[in-house]
Length: 593
Image (cartoon, rainbow, N blue to C red; front, side, top):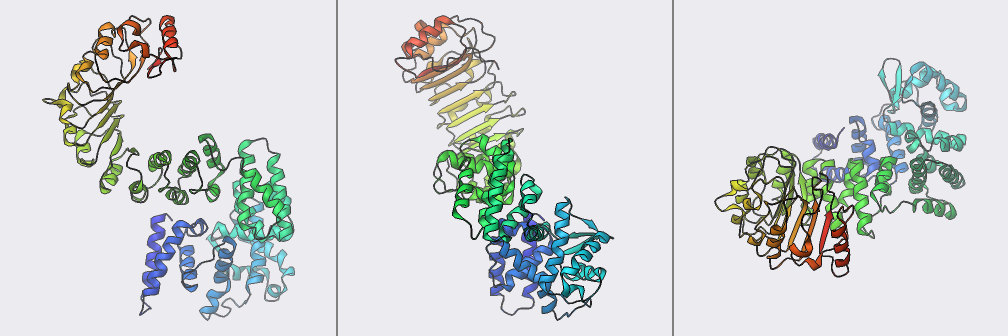
């Protein structure tokens, strides 16, 4: 069941329960608190995956007056008790199969079935084998053996325990994998099979079995198991496998209510090798370990910006309801880098919910990217944002209809092969920054006539990564531009830069042979410039002009990112100038695309 289906089921269950109550106030409160618990507690969410388990959780929650056990083991103990005996007893159904067993003998027999399944890598077994397993276990459970044959006892477990089902004639499985893991862990601990548990520590199918084994074990057994886990992890050459085992040991600490402090310290020391996260490589590696790492992710309190970013990135890679709850913890994190990471994680989660619970609370300076109409409409429902990037084949009409006009100050349009007419931009009076990437149908800005971009009186930054056959004459003379980037190859057509007297920053990453003395001279006439970055298009094989004589304030050139320059004269000039200033930086002399 998906999140929405679980929510709907809980609502219907409580609606049915209200029909038998005159005062529904308590049920209303139970429903809301249970919804919150299911959406925020991973242990509970793991159980609520089918109607039977959802109904069990609803009944257990109501029975305990809105409170559920906080620990996983305690939660499963309570669920087992309700299924195994309380259900029949509270319905006055005394031994409907002719067999009356308490919780303990039923658990002893059921855990034998569970342990066989996990040891054999199975989730299902045939009925004949199940009966043989019960027959082998019966002599050790006299209270069950006295009431009938193995076949009769197994039939009772199948029909009345609430833990087994028959998905097809002659086939048996547990109603939920969680109960299989829980009971097999109990059997492993009672049999002292710690070596077997450790051998499967790198196997995700044994993850919950090992964690529950720590919960079932006595303090000395816990210490033994955890030490063996650490030693096994230390001996693995594979980084991913070693990390998985060490983090599994860390996850087990949650269930170790009593443990030798020296063992606890050893486990924590191994975990410090990667937690907190510091790089995207570590985030990817941690995400590959599996969903259980979500429970180990720290924060947001006490994390630096880069650490908080990587926690969000890890949750994004895992992209589940539990991961979403991790992401939500960081919406108030003050670091701007974390806010940007939260904005970029949108596409990994459900669109409207993420917009409502995360994007709504983000710093307005964080750019949000929309790639579908549904995402644009979700932003519209929030009242729009100041900074938006739109990626994909949206028409001008779609952007005009779906973008909220007034708050939009910064707009990037990228990867759009269909848009050609930019006249719709006049409808965004607050626009200050415009960037076009990969918009081949936009050949110039002439469609903005008669007043061009000057109609956007607030526009101060313009980045164009599309061809302009008419050069800078297609740009709006007199517009209040302070920052200009022309990302496509430019040459002689790039003239008249003095038409923007407020221009401070210029980026020209793909100069061609046509860019010469006249073009440098026009840039020199801009009175307020403070920085320039340039590079050569791949078709340019030699330098036909020099900043020394033709460029504005040529003494301010720098070679801080010079890279593979093929012009020794310019390289020497930039190297000398770099000692005085680094405000004008060459991007590269070998720009290739």
